[in-house]
Image (cartoon, rainbow over all chains, first blue to last red):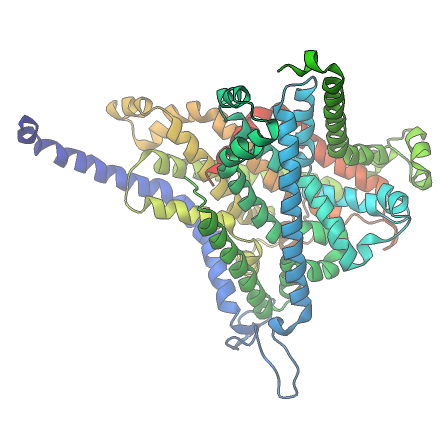
Length: 309
Length: 283
């Protein structure tokens, strides 16, 4: 009761400070918000806008409104012009999804194995932990060139040695598996790092108790480690999946831009937009890639209730 | 319970299997890179040799001499450095302002701002490629490192803001309150009080942003024609004819741009893991 009598004086003062702080916060945020609006908001708006027009990249001012014609349009002669009617687009979608699902699955399994090994006590553990960082530190373009060389049918350790001179990258159907192998090699380290960080935050006495109760290591892994690791694992999964869905550089370097267009959604969009200079059609494809990725993000977040705070 | 005493045979078999696994993992992680280093030290004629002969072939630094003498590669290194350092500095400056506001101030719409920034980091780059291309053209920044610095903000800013915000939240409030009582403005507080404490965080975030900018390919390929960064130079490294792939020099160039990164990563190992987990878990 005594508190109430002194109460009125303080809130007005703190409210004044709060309001001043809120104003200062806006000023501190303003540069970032402007930068984001400039490099993300405005270009994204332009992409959606141009997806409804027929326009050329070199002269965007001369454009004609098409509505959804870039997506779906058949001329009177029965010629299909919308990209959704292009089998090559659907091939790129299929290949990207296949690439994402298989490589993220393998990265998770290998990442888990490597993290569990590095997390246990043995001689040379520090060395393995260091080695783990090497593939992650290598630029994607460099790792793509390294592997293109390994796959080369006349010089490569894999292409000439293991595959006996078969040009695995020449054919999109076989190339996709070669690309999965490259992506798995490059990014398993990232998975392993995140899983390792999760493993090291697990309480050790829990395992001692499990040992006392006679639970086998196998049971401990499935009943203790995996459920407790779930949050860290899910976040890593979401980020790897998103990276794999928007992949471009591995395909572009290893297959060339023409074949990259048949192998990744981003490659298909970039070919239409930049190589063919079709601003309207390319923007429409970009909108489709954007929407596909956003739908997958929402699915992940709702299905697994991923929390980012 | 102790296997070593109850069943030594099984114990040593298990240890052997474990070390075999360690060996396989180490080989898997390092062998491709080792082979690239080896190739960079062999002459073009030796590429036809069998692997055993290839390992034993004489070492030469010709590929490195050739690569460093290549004007495209020299320019690539310079532009990569300008672009990566430039985007790191801009994003650290803007990012720390934003992180200070988001980590220490309470105001309406904070959650919305955080989610917008998170959403941008989820963006596929291709969704802004056409718009950025015309914007960069209109600003007269095509083929200019400034154009790349500007476009790289799309991924460096969300990342720095998220990681720095999580660090700023962990700074004890007393530090800032003391400065406020002394009448310091928010910018003074940020630069004089928080920056020294945030130094490790700034180094970590800066380093990760640097790696991302150094490696970027799609924007660099699209927004430049002659002022290429090293990833684009390496991707398009060509020999005398169109079908001749000069693997030795390509591997040498690859090693040159990779070794500084590997050294940085190894030196800052601990920071990187904490930065990655803060960045990944918090966005």
